[in-house]
Length: 234
Image 1: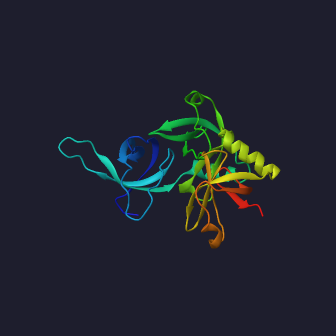
Image 2: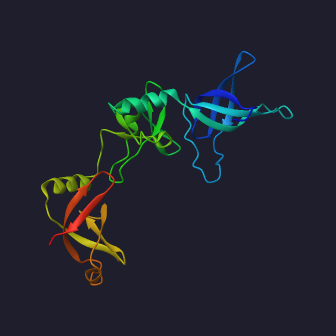
Image 3: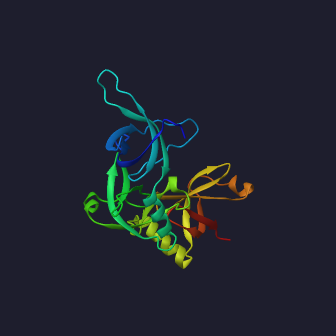
């Protein structure tokens, strides 16, 4: 660490304007300074700063009356994050509130006021604005990668086509699926209309005879809220 670096703690994060407020001690006095977070170090993904982060930084001096600002911001640790990750190892269920920041959904954990980006399935309706004032339950995704932490709700509002796919998967029901597109690497099928499209691998000789609109009888062999896998019925 640079000898001129100062240690402080982030007290608030403005996601829209991309800056943080940092509290630190200087000459036995508590002070606050701001720092921009949109500077991307070449080749590295920027850290997702949160309230409670312990950070190091340097200060740019005042220039012609301008207030001082922080720069060279570096994340050190976050005790609250470490505690949540530890809890997730035995009971990965938390409560919070939905927030919409710069057209992106977040969950704000209600004990530590930490923001986590909300991961939604592509077959899931986004939360309604009226639900923002109601508490929600969520789990942490990627707890083994603190800089990639995200949230997933326990309650989902899936589109009807996905719910139908779930039933077909559970019952191992065959599906007549039209071919939407053919590429050299596989065929793309529409399931229950055009809301769900899946890729199927086929032998090259069979793939070469397929065309858009052909029907294939398939069965779902794997289903999650991020991926659906089908196989052709023999």
